Image (cartoon, rainbow, N blue to C red; front, top):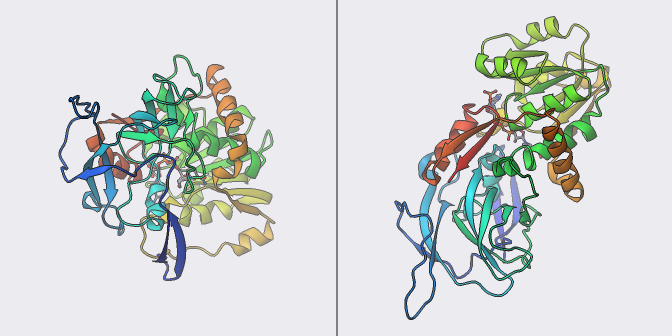
Length: 386
Ligand SMILES: NC(=O)c1ccc[n+]([C@@H]2O[C@H](COP(=O)([O-])OP(=O)(O)OC[C@H]3O[C@@H](n4cnc5c(N)ncnc54)[C@H](OP(=O)(O)O)[C@@H]3O)[C@@H](O)[C@H]2O)c1
């Protein structure tokens, strides 16, 4: 089902969006209850009339976020799932991801939808031999505990249907949401394909202690670069330099970035992996070398803003040093998705990539985990464990 909506963009323009309501999972037939305090995970009841009943909990968007998201912008509801049809399978969420993209992407969704997000879920019932009970999938199913998936229905929003979590043996399945999933592939393809780094060069990474940033820095070290991270606390700086192998780290909240960068990179910057945008991006780009490359991965410093903030004009830096500045969305490399996962898995196995997760326990704490990540409380990947 498609719905066309007229949406005011935060900086005052309007745009028409064909919003796709259909997902690769089957939401039709769900019966929504207004209970908001259920602590049950999933419930199967047997009776002589109906053999099975599964209750799922999910968060629906009831208000658009204004500045920082509020808990009342989402509502926790309980829905009864229909029984499985041939070809379908039922999954139970084990780990859910909270990611910065959720903040800006929500603007493109109609009110009433399930809050968007990816999860690692276990197949608990199946009428599809390709998705047997006991296997795990990674899917953009949203903030919900249980989902019936019909593989025949394409996910038009994320353009990626649920896939089986690759065999990762003893590694935590939650890595499917981090290093071995979307953020890991963002680091891999964004660095290699956009920055095109060369051994001996200097790279600066903002948002350096997060899921993507800490991964980019480690790959850059594998490739022989001089790596400088920018992040928001001394604890994060210490972690980057003492455990992640970064050469230098700058706490942008306490240290003047421009002056400190000149000290630690007197040779100038060849690559900038930008996760935050804004003033930090401007500062770094004015210290770049001739033919420097900038990968614009994210601009989290503006995600909560109602209108785009004013910041330094960048054209002189781009022009005089002939910089190449390129934005990218990781889904550009959907056709190479497995390549990224497998290379990152190899590096983990070889001990060249280290991972860290900030885990929040409990589906009822999804919102706190999300807002905590947006405020910088996470080190490495922010995850919710059910
Ligand atoms: N292009 C793509 O396809 C793609 C894919 C994935 C992610 N991304 C982008 O990559 C960036 C990082 O994503 P992630 O999943 O790895 O998140 P993350 O870095 O694990 O978490 C977000 C971090 O952003 C930092 N932050 C928050 N507000 C900030 C501000 N005003 N200025 C500077 N830093 C701020 C916080 O760390 P501090 O303590 O350091 O402030 C926070 O921990 C985001 O911008 C995201 O949108 C893009």
